[in-house]
Amino acid sequence: MLLVASLLVLVALGAVGGELQPSALRVMVAAVFGLLAVLFWPGCAASPVRTTLRVAAWSATAAGLAAIMLTMLGNPPQPLAQVLASCAMLLLMLLPAHALAAWLEGLLMRRAAAAPGARSAMVAVGARELAGRVVAGTLALLGALPLWLGPAGELLSDRHPWLIDVLLGISPLTHLAVASGNDLLRNQWFYQHANLAALPFDYPGLRLLLPGYGLAVAVTALLVLTERSACLRRSAGEPSNAP
View 1 (cartoon, helix red, strand yellow):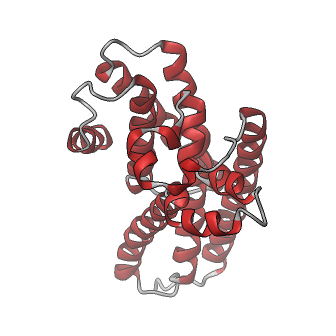
View 2 (cartoon, helix red, strand yellow):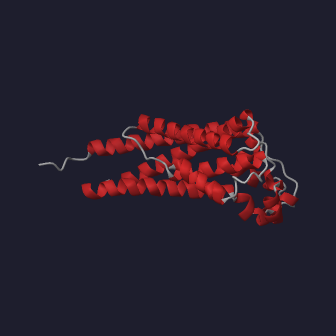
View 3 (tube, helix red, strand yellow):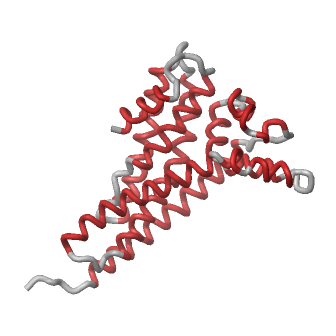
């Protein structure tokens, strides 16, 4: 379902017409799979360790599907090294994103643990869907950060010239562009719609991004393990309603 949904979105965005430059196509495919994968998050498992493994497996699956899609859409074919670099960055982004979805799902389920049994299953499904939507929306907002905070950044850039680099550095779309070798703000659409393109700026380097994502993965994995352990302890401590 993720593959089909991503293909439909890419067709709607015009990614299959061969008009995009190869690096822009890599950014678009990775961004589409990154957003939709969180919406298709399969939900937490029964134990903290299994949930962590599910986060890793689903993130790797989404990144692998994105790589397959890139080999199908490239005309001429995408260089394998560039495909791997783009999808590796996508994997680094999806690991903390899915871990956050798992943490949020566990938090919602723990707060709704007092619901009756029949309603409990509905709560579990609703928590999974809500967690995926919240994380996907957060990724979309952060990705569009150079657009909706661009005017404010331009106004403040005289006093704080570093602010432009911070706005670009926070955006996960910028990270995908750096890994894909794409000059994001100087693409035609961004150059016309993002005022930051006319200002001096520097993209974040991989030497900064890789340790940052490594720290994000470690922190979010700790959150998942802690939250799922709390859920299990609460479930084990509840008295049984069976006669």
